[in-house]
Amino acid sequence: MNNLRIIIIADQQEKILISEALNAAFQQLQITCYDNQHDFEKSVKLYNCDFLIAEESLVNRGFYTQLSPFLELTKIPLLILKDPGSQSFNNHVVKELTKDSDYLQQLPSLISQLINEQIAATGQNKILFLEDEEIDITFIKRKFIKLNPQYECDVVSSIADLRKQLGEKEYDLVVSDFHLPDGNAFDSIATAKAADIPIVIVTGQGSEKTAVELMKSGAADYLIKDKSMGEHMLLLPSIVKSVLNFKKLENYNSGLLEMLQTKNQDLERFAHIIAHDLRSPIASCLLLINTLQILGEDLSPDVQETMEMLTEVSQNMTNTIEGIYQYTVLDSQADAFVKVDMKKAAEEALQNLKVKVTECGAIVNIEPMPEISANYVAMVQLFQNLMGNGIKYRGDKTPELTVRSFKQADEQVFAISDNGIGIAKENHKKIFDIFSRLHSSTSQYEGVGMGLTIVKRIIERHNGRIWVESDLGMGTTFFFAFKAA
Ligand code: ADP
Image (cartoon, rainbow, N blue to C red; front, side, top):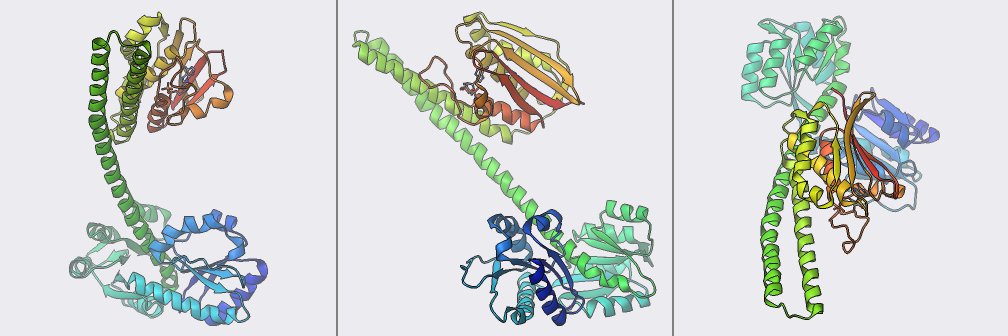
């Protein structure tokens, strides 16, 4: 087995022993060593590695959790060196070798076996070379195909043949020369792209500019030709591995994205069902309680009180359902970003709160505010929730609210201040959590603890941040900020 790239996480002494054992067994072996998990995580690029070895005592649980999806996808083997007597992992992604007296002798054959199993599991990758010069074809055959029997390789010598061959057989990768009899690398890139196959360009045009152009037009990577010796072909295995693994990850990601979209649709459907199917029975309950109250004028005070409590509980439930519904559909609504006049959005929110404002005689001062790029409906909701809270948590004062905006560093900040009961410092984080309330449902403050959760979600969807300045009895100011245009 040639051209293996092995990554080892082990202490100094172990590293030397392993390196000696492996260098004696494999040709053109590349070993990269790390002393600990942290250094490994900081610097390692796993895409083109063939094999991973880690000493059990140097890695923790997070190591496996983080690596598992990648290893499962690429089938890169991970071998854990265990101390004699320690427990087995029982994890199908991880292979184990106990460090007993002859483990160094066992190591090379175990690595070969596991890599062969990996090849068998992933299937033989097929590579199509596009090269027209005899000497380069010889280099490809001698310095790549012969040394890397794990790949099934074919060679064609023109763009026309590339097109034909891709139509007849499936490939995992194309490796194309820059100059071709009937075109150049940009034509081969377009052809491979049309067939959704990654392509690597081998170029004698050693300039950065050409490389950038090639990558921009869709090449997965490039390799600079060594005209006289063909040594560049020895670098190709590592590029091939990283491109193939990258492609796998890309497919995996788009699979995840699709799954996420389906889940979101399910969630939205679920939210609609909850909203519809639960809202109407509660509404009926409220109606029935109301009827009972009218019919039973001479009911005892205890029964009257119980009925009032029933009404309140049902009302609370309706509010909770409404909150959950709003929160769930937030993520599935496409964010149409337009120029939003924030003063207008705040005024519309105030209009929606008119009944509450009139009830307590709240004084609300909305100062001039700029336009920002945002979702208009979301901005109205944001102001409505924050101003609504400013009015609700007023204590026994007449609420006085100020809504204003100012620029600070590279952000446009918006602030909603009130003169209400305030929020103790230790609760400043907690209040944004779902269903988090600082008052019981029997207190004078009704609510379900979703208003600020929705506010925070809206801000996150606008790439902004939100914070609060307040203390008990001191009034409250909520700030939110977006990067200034
Ligand atoms: P709700 O108002 O339904 O309880 P919110 O998520 O809007 O839910 O707020 C969470 C908690 O934060 C409230 O229960 C309240 O204790 C506190 N809070 C929010 N806004 C204010 C405010 N302006 N003044 C004082 N307390 C507030």
